[in-house]
Image (cartoon, rainbow, N blue to C red):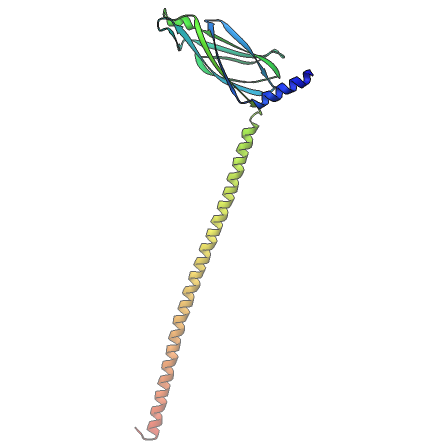
Length: 219
């Protein structure tokens, strides 16, 4: 029964993965706030945070760049520290769940009172957490890169085929132009030969008729 309930919880968690959960809470300067998050093994967690201190004179929360934030994440089942990050009054964080089960995420803000007499020790901490799919060690990105590389190779091969076809067409056009020019030259040469033959035949016939007329004493 417990195993079925755990399996159902895991399925529901996977179905609602990649959803961002936002929350805010209040703490005093230097205090640490922790909360638990149930995570499957290998899931990638990212998030952003922002701190604001309470300004009594302005009666509102304002950002203070002097605030420093320490964030840690610890696997409760294995007592394994998966994140230990220090940053400014706002920033980003990420870690990968080392083991399946509860993970303790702790935040601590200090330096709120360094802004002078206008500052106070009350800090508003806004936290947005996004739980994504299991970290595949970059295999998904590598597969996408390989897929893009394969598509580029296919496009390059098609481009080379187009270039080869264009080169072949240009060679055929040059051969056709050369053949056409050769035929034109042959036609012109043949026309001159025919004209020469006709001229020679006419000259021979005239010469023969002249000799015939002279022999008959008709001229």
